[in-house]
Amino acid sequence: MAEVRVAKSAGFCYGVERAVKLAEETAREKGGCAMLGSIIHNVHVVAELEALGARQVDSVEEVRPGETVIIRSHGEGRAVYDQLRARGVEILDATCPNVTRIHQIVAQAEQAGRQPVIVGTPDHPEVTAIAGWCSHPVVVSGAEELEKWLVQDEKRRNLPLTFVSQTTSTRKIWDDCVKKAKKECTNAEFFDTICGATSKRQEEAHRLAQQCSLMVVIGDGKSSNTKRLAEICKEVCPDVRLIERAADLEPSALSQANVVGITAGASTPAWIIKEVYDKMSEENM
Ligand code: F3S
Image (tube, rainbow, N blue to C red; front, side):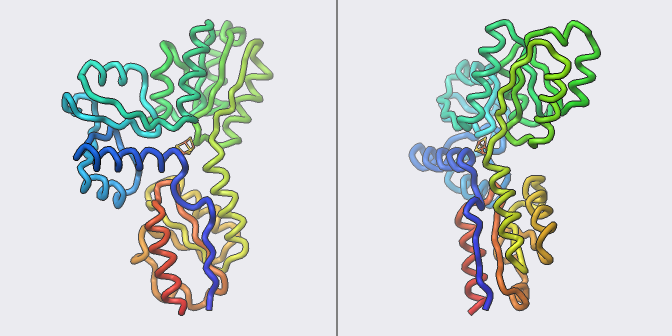
């Protein structure tokens, strides 16, 4: 009989959990609400929220006057709040506090005459939202892009620069940018705003996978974070299955395993993790 172990950090991070809970509670209390942008990359959770009356809208124009709108954990730029207020809608802000802190850092830096430099993926919603708290943001995807920006104008090396990072950026991308800026710029300050939730989940999955003959990774197969989680497990575990729901797990999967590990991406709710755990426990009897 295989032993089943679940990683403690499996599933929702604090920021996503908070946003989903707020949407759930608001939809129940008010009989419906709007969610601006995709609140979570999980079709099952989105379907549950829709059943409660929380509808996804992709632009401010789609929010109806008088409606309550949830801002997702990625946050929004300052202009979006202004547009929503102008439409007379109630705003419930589920921006992750880690992201709000970045908005404050860049806004204050600009007020103090500094140039914010955001290290992150330019078209990622969190990054466009951070840029939306600056009047002249600079976004670089890594050290190479930073180099390109610096050489475009020699004066840039002497500007007062304030560096922040997208919360889900990798440590290497950030460290390479810091290294370059420290070497080449005369007045740069750095705020390491990478969130620990992703790296903690990856480290724990890696540790657990080392002890298991089968590792089950639950999450959306299209999510880059979930795929990354599976790759990390594959480095140390011979059999890794990436599934979305318990039904995706082949009944024979457990037959050869001694110790089975379960981890899950940040968009996987606790009830799906439990569903997988229960199915495994049943088949294990
Ligand atoms: Fe917040 Fe970190 Fe999650 S920034 S939304 S707790 S990944």
